[in-house]
Length: 346
Ligand SMILES: [Zn+2]
Image 1 (spheres, rainbow, N blue to C red):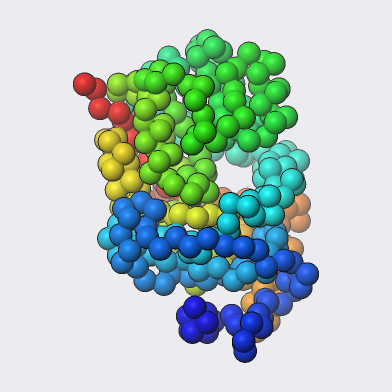
Image 2 (image 1 turned 120 degrees about the vertical axis):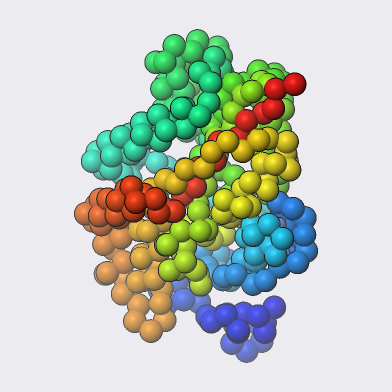
């Protein structure tokens, strides 16, 4: 592993001595790891080195991490990854708030709502009109509200989320929401869900095939699962491939996909792929530029990096989103990929 790190840029110098990127928290702990020798999608052990980097976003740990690409299905996975006992370190209590509304401005929130409306109207053309709905990682419940407004009774609207506060509030509002991971959830009846959505969750889980199989069991015959995840086959992923790419979200993203590996995953789990779409991913561009500006060893520029973080970075956020919308209009594969898959009818 020492040789590998040396081959791929910033890494170890001498025995046991780690050269952290400039400006990185020198007191961040070295955390324990577990090895993942085979592809989490197709189980192949044939792989090539893909990228390496650090926890550039939150600096929760000092480990250097490596991504590998499967030679069979093109999925990319983190090996080693943080041990299960370290999850509280890499997901600090501020993590969920960090990802949500209190850090974003009104303009950014309104823009996101508009993009969500376009996204939903796009994939809903590919599915039948649902009479039950499940959102995995439902947060404050904005998608649950969307389907309640469309007329689905609240006792047929389900959500899973890890935030105790969100779950309590949504249950008080009449939704069937549980504080569970997909893997541990036994509260959703088999074959009861017409439409399930899971946005930016699959890349975080340890066993993506187990998760998709479990959701497939909850779908009614002909029901659809819609998943969105960072797109490895995008310009930003290629431009920042070596390690700065925001989509890596090191070390919290454990499996990354392109259309090919997503198709492989869904078909292995018995679902029929109906449709792919490409979504804008402002966070991906913003984080990529931010990490490259702040942590590059030649000319680290923390002041420049500030322009790619909110609130200062709002003009760049609008520019990056506009650029992705324009590119998508011309058929480009943008920063996030969305897949719609259907459970076969008997
Ligand atoms: Zn594979």
